[in-house]
Length: 52
Image 1 (cartoon, rainbow, N blue to C red):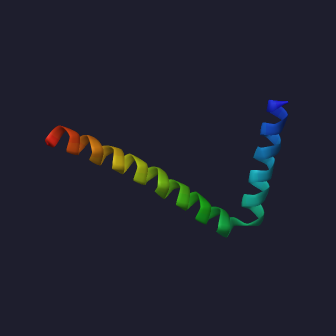
Image 2: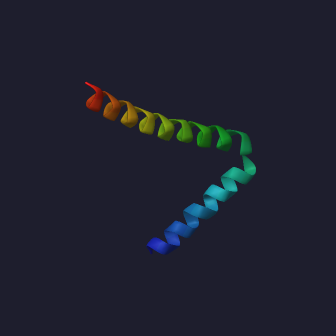
């Protein structure tokens, strides 16, 4: 059941990207920026932790 649901979600994602490339790109850009911010903040945390 999980495998079938995974394939359905993948199909819907590909369909959404194919029919709405602009909004899909904005979502991907936003997610990428969010992940980058998380790693940047982790780096800042450890820098501050070890420097003082």
